[in-house]
Image 1 (cartoon, one colour):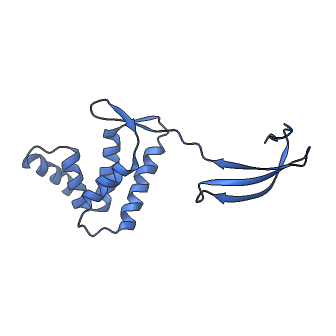
Image 2 (cartoon, helix red, strand yellow; image 1 turned 30 degrees about the vertical axis):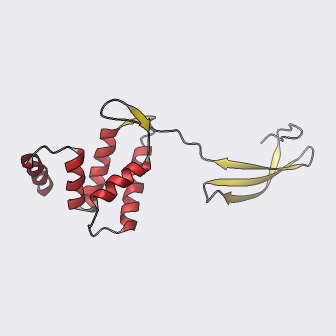
Image 3 (cartoon, rainbow, N blue to C red; image 1 turned 45 degrees about the vertical axis):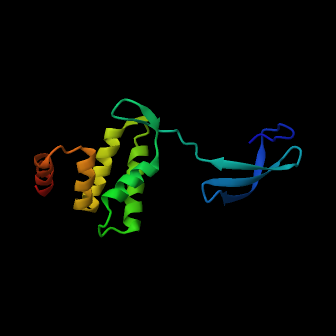
Length: 149
């Protein structure tokens, strides 16, 4: 790290500790040339993820939308808040592990449905009925038959 006072390119780390609720690291440094001390912060750099909607509009990824959909699907189901939070974290991890700058909302929906299928079958059917826009009872029954097989 370059010293902000004298520009010397070699500095030592004196102390490191977590900062910003463990989202970054605060480092106290000392310059070997001028002896002055300064603080730096190290933080993971994230690339903003863009979601491509069904109508080809683009918007920034928003975790709260996934949370809302999963919570709605799990409403009055025997699923704990911890399980819901864990599933949402798994969904988000799977989305970000793709390391793409853009992702279609349809792929996000499929990931959510896969995770809900494992979590609770009723929550899965609820989400699928809205996500896949079931038009009638027959479409609904087809999805239930697939699930039962």
